[in-house]
Image (tube, rainbow, N blue to C red):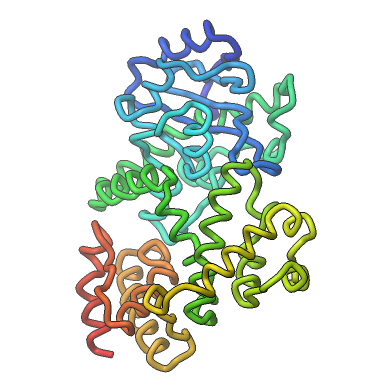
Length: 375
């Protein structure tokens, strides 16, 4: 049977202060957000839902009320444990709107990935699995910026936080029983840290592309510069990445290394607007890459289809699959393909390995080292 609760709509500073006072002594705080970001880089907060047990769920309208110091204290490191599901974008929304780094957290999707072979189970299925209740789906794609919100929307939003503690309490017991609660704490601390974007994240964005091995060192240096520039610009202009230049377009520019606007215009995906506003900047980066000293160029990456690469990657996958089967969790929870490829590349280049740390390191580091040594 669904929990019984009332919805408190919060749209004034006074109402927010009263909500924070009611939540001040909470041992945990269930949190969710609704947002819009189709035309912006930064998410536009449309709704913030809070629940700490009892018979009241608080729905804050971030369009008309600003986060105060009391709410920042609740959401920040000195506040209670925050319960979220698939927290990545929620953390970003809250940090952008409330100007606070949310911590500590317990992510129920991550918890589920440590308890089963389902690496990314959705919230509705998670609730049904742990409580037996079926949540409504009608408002999944609602316009959360519209006002007033319908009664159906309000209840849908409130249920997103009301069920979180029921799921979490069951998951926590299971994690403790299996000796994996510390794993979840480590994972959630990493999620909080990863949400704090910095210059290093811009520097490493280029590594997401799966075809880097096709680039010559000078092209690779250019692609790295182009992605670093794009990451800074989309935040400055508050635009989606694709509205400025997608990874695919930047990669094509790096391959062609155009010398003038005409050559730039012939590259597939390069729009006239990009040439008009940023053509000179892009061409300047091309020229900078052309004139880089050889000593400053990155090393070429080994092709993933080489026998040496395939053999090593297969050996690492075997380690991961074997350990995942023993733990009864999905292999990608232990290590994703990009991590394994990076280890293989480092091994082939003869540079120090960036072995997994923490609980993953305990399970995998020694076996990874041995597998690479054997091949």
